[in-house]
Image (cartoon, rainbow, N blue to C red; front, side, top):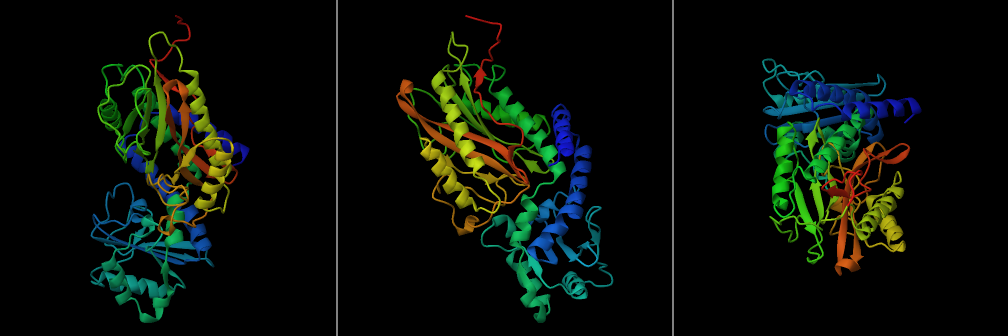
Length: 448
């Protein structure tokens, strides 16, 4: 990113962080502008790089291919009937035709190429468009390794192959890499918007973990979760998973590995001296966030968190640094995981790393760097060998186990922040937590 673009990016982040959530009409305009930009400036390059000159995406209403959902205009909430999209890359003309075998245009970006009165059979019309262009490789969305790139259903695949001339069958290939590249790659404009999304996410967490929401001795973890869920609804946003809030304290044993799936109790009353943790994300403008932060509930007379918790959070930041410093273009997620764990362990830390792609989907397609139950590396069907590429976003999700002598037990510092891996390396999309949130907030002018 050059200096001018960096200055523009910074200015836009500041401006957008102060904006209200857009109206539905404004959101639709922005989303359609972004979609047109992606079709015009992103798609040609990734089709060339993956060697696919024709991409066919087929889905039926309410049974959408995950890829087609990212290609529909804002006014299309679902595919209609059977929706067929055809993208043809002509390198000599430097064009990408965008056609829909549908009765009508798909928004402003994809034009209709089917007159049902002239050709009643939709499949025959699709095949005629293919044969007229005579592509060398026809990409379809089937994949062993990436679920988001595996959206073509069996019946549509069989019908396609039945109609396609047999001499062209050998040209049909998996569009796996093309689909993943389409899903994972972020444009400059999307990254400006992403910063706003993360800022909104941080602000909601800060309000949830404050005296405005939590009254120690009264408020429960479940009540905070539902407050966060309602806050998202009231702001006109969506969330892609139910928020979780949990507690670690001196009287409780460390339970399970992943708080949201392993014995995390509901309705725990929040008390002074608790270390609170949340997992929370929003959906807005076609993008998703995923964030975990920590807060400390002050005891009477305290004005800051105990030094041992401050130090524990710093250990979590050190694991983050070990991971992000090992993110290098071309390395697989398993290679990055192994290198990062070794660096953190050599530094005396007790890390676990389970970082996933983030963007169009919450658990998106791309480079997976560990799973909470696969610290030795992920397997083939989870994208074992998929390399890290620039212009991609990740939920930097991990934890470190820290022994707290004062509590006579271990705790886990669980953190998650959106991070961008660009041509110039890694950066956080909108910062990361380096200080514990305090409940209640402390006014520096007040003393004991």
